[in-house]
Length: 163
Image 1 (cartoon, rainbow, N blue to C red):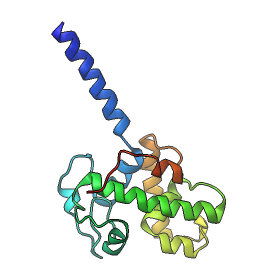
Image 2 (cartoon, rainbow, N blue to C red):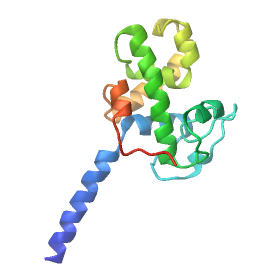
Image 3 (cartoon, helix red, strand yellow):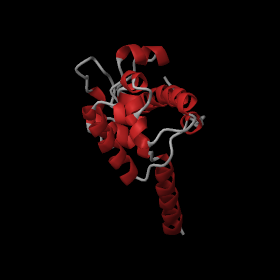
């Protein structure tokens, strides 16, 4: 009886872990800092050349605009902040273009939002160096099983809390 209960518990844990997996979260972390696990580690302590913080490489001023937390080395807190930032940027993109962004555009909204907006959200006008990196993100994201990214998909997670 105990073995059967343990087996059922194991199945439940695996099912819960698969629900928590996020291709967007994982692909962004991998592209930005090489983080390959949702567990806290070295990638959470990377400080970018312009002072970017967290595994998602958020500019300090942007971080402060979205949270009072200074806990940027906590992957859960960083992901919550990232989702809030992306929700705003995706919302602006959807309002301007009338459609949700493709994965390549999601990365441009993340990594080069001013440049992307400045070229009218037209992919063909984006600097080739930025477009190449965004293409690598898209390939990774799609390989991980990523789907459409819309503002509602970014904000509809009531379990996320920033500490």
